[in-house]
Image 1 (cartoon, rainbow, N blue to C red):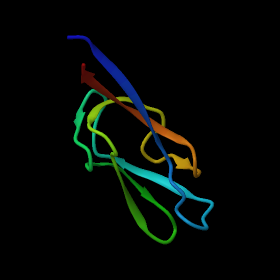
Image 2: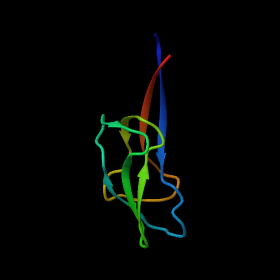
Image 3: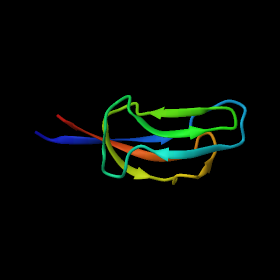
Length: 86
């Protein structure tokens, strides 16, 4: 059986009318297994805290932004890699 991989980029969502979004915490490290619906990281604005959930199960394959980074809507935070058997 062959397997295929699928990469999913974690992109900063639109969190409303704010110029400052801070990545305050990663809940996983590179190489960790992530289950769909798990809170991958936490984003904070001047108004609220937003947990970012994983839309797929897979491995945290890349982290592009470190804890404490100030980010904007649409920026890539990292990547989850899913490996499926065919």
